[in-house]
Picture 1 (tube, protein in one colour):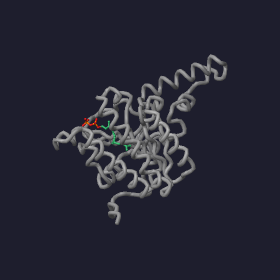
Picture 2 (spheres, rainbow, N blue to C red):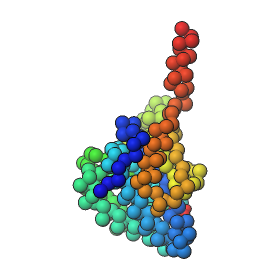
Picture 3 (tube, rainbow, N blue to C red):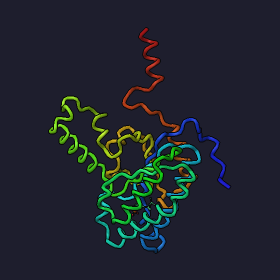
Length: 256
Ligand code: FPP
């Protein structure tokens, strides 16, 4: 039985895109005298819980920072364990993605992944590409700066080949060269484990996202806290660099 939704969660005002930095697996494990890998295993259960909760309430896009370009520097054993966990996740979740209409998109430097994981990722992306109910964006071997650099390189190449006029490059042209092209910018970024950093995640797409940070470690972050983050988001006023809507209306009244 799914738990009842919180009464103060307004399903008509959900963020369209939620992005998550899933942090704190290592600390969760160390506090229990377990290996860091146990923390990642438990973190996989939180991934499943948050994907299911998002699908249930109608979030359109959910992005998960599963492995950063910097994570390659971790001990070999931990990197290998994370790669196998991702692979196992793809294999066990495919039927659920198909049943629930979930499309999987992968962003990052996928060529660095072990060939078997690359193949599974590609197969899952292909198998789910026509699913329409929700999109899960998996950021693997992803770095925000690296994505901006590869976009700049591709644009420079296009300009050199005469396919694009440098004078006409604007923010939307640039965004079309990022690996996140076609995905709306996140409305809400959630980061677990209390760190106040972006950590080279979606640098460009996060320009105007609301940020919610919780001290809860990722393996303990489940459905109930996810809803709390959405409720906190609904209490924010998003201005995108403009003045608050009500103050602007007041200003116009006074000026008249
Ligand atoms: C950060 O915790 C987490 C990661 C580097 C990996 C995230 C991976 C998972 C949640 C598991 C599998 C993912 C999927 C999509 C199935 P940390 O190790 O940096 O924790 P710490 O800061 O406490 O050391």
